[in-house]
Amino acid sequence: MEFLSEYGMFVAKVVTTVIAIVVVISVVSASGGRGRRGGKKGTVRVSKLNEHFEELRDSLREVVLDKESLKSLRKEEKKQAKSDKKEAKAVRKKSADEDSDNSSTAGSSRRVYVINFKGNIAADAVVCLREEISAILSLATPDDEVLVRLESPGGMVHAYGLASSQLVRLKNAQIPLTICVDKVAASGGYMMACLADKLVAAPFAIIGSIGVLVQLPNFHRVLKKHEVDYEIISAGEYKRTLTTFGEITEKGRDKVREDVET
Image (cartoon, rainbow, N blue to C red; front, side, top):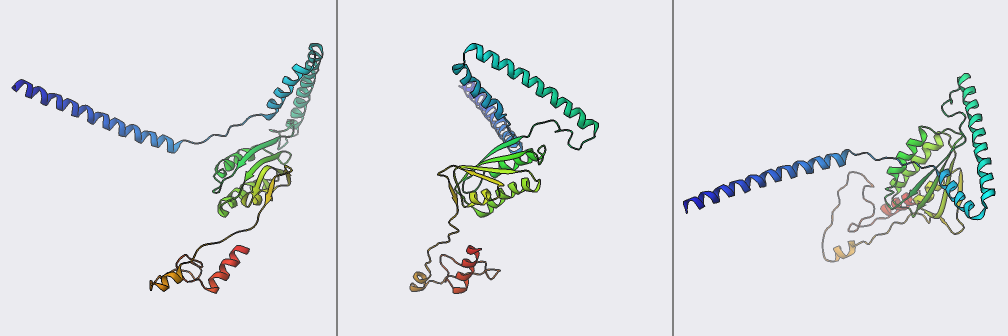
């Protein structure tokens, strides 16, 4: 019996030690995982739309054209590509000789950068928009163009103000901005659309804003009827204008109306 008792104590100690080690490892792993997640940076994925449309075109050609016509067409395209490459090389060489400030992009054809913005109430997509525009500004010139595919029902004023300010960065760099709306660009989305040098919209797209709306119930008379006091102490005169339980004054109402209209 004494042996079994000592054996049981030994097993209990081993199990306790193992559990303690597992707990420590789990805590360390979880802390490391949070650190990695917190420090991880996003990436900007870039794809060449020309290649996508060329693949669609080639797929259609293979069905529509006969073998001889297709072979002849491809031969002509290779010849043209070789000629374009030679011409671009000559232009780059000439630019280098003239010490052009834009020698890094000389000889390149005009580029169109296409980015997407699908907004919600909080305009969360502004995080991606900011990084995308930063990447574009590192390379684009006024000869290029940025096209934004915009879709947003609007939302918070300050959030869409930030999104609009990102588009202003393109304007300040004198890069032409085109905005395309397939479905809706309302309220804050409309504010963004107004910054475009050129706005392209689908026939039934909804673009515009009906203004700003402020509405809330007020229970001040109910509280007063039941002899319940409600007190507000604020640091500024217009810190609280319309509240749910406080008395609404004409001065406060006029201030809210002024803020809404501006």
